Image (cartoon, rainbow, N blue to C red; front, side, top):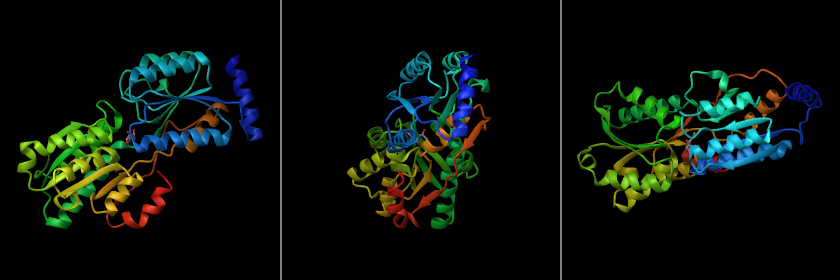
Length: 320
Ligand code: GYE
């Protein structure tokens, strides 16, 4: 009955073209670990406010248990829709089932969950992280060919949060590309948990490793720009010139990465779009109105390097 009323009301409101004050969305944000995340939070909060949607927002500080608690409290409050960017891929089935039993649709944003039961969520909205990893790998192969005429080098990989979809898939996509080149290999790989501070720490350890000394072509591939920017600090503090002595690739395309590239300290960033608010609330309104929504919506994303970073920086500063 509640659902029927909600959908009748939803259709009426949709016909009226406004949901102001009528929809409550619980958004279980995963943390505030990176500039990507801050931009994502601003996009979600800003768009909810613009549409007059009641947003119940929580920040799980990168802990799955906190996110699960937040989802349970949204269920108890009886929100209309839950938005969930799951910090890691596994372990979501019980709480998603609870939401399903309560009749509350869950829209996954940004990161996927690992489940064989797709009925546990309504839709996924975000990036294809495998494609992003491939974009990083393809840029690198072209760069090496252009510079040296051979595809050869040693990769130091700064991995994202262990068990997180973007860490798993950015590695997978990148590895699939470089696997075709026997002289291009990952020689060190460690998690920096998507933060600047940990990226710096991990890079300090990389620089002290025997692999670093042995590497003829030093390549740093970070699963996000924040870790890479932390790594660049470590590299500079060690008296190494990041722009001249390394090849450095990040993911996200935050404005600070464009700036680092423009300054000649970094070489490439693969785009990952955090501005998901408008699409998320389009989907929320459609779901509340009882309309069908696509199961998966991927963002369209590019790759940027030193050919364009400086020219694009002012525009990127207006984005994220
Ligand atoms: O790339 C990283 C953030 O899940 C796509 O999480 C997101 C990633 C993003 O911490 O900066």
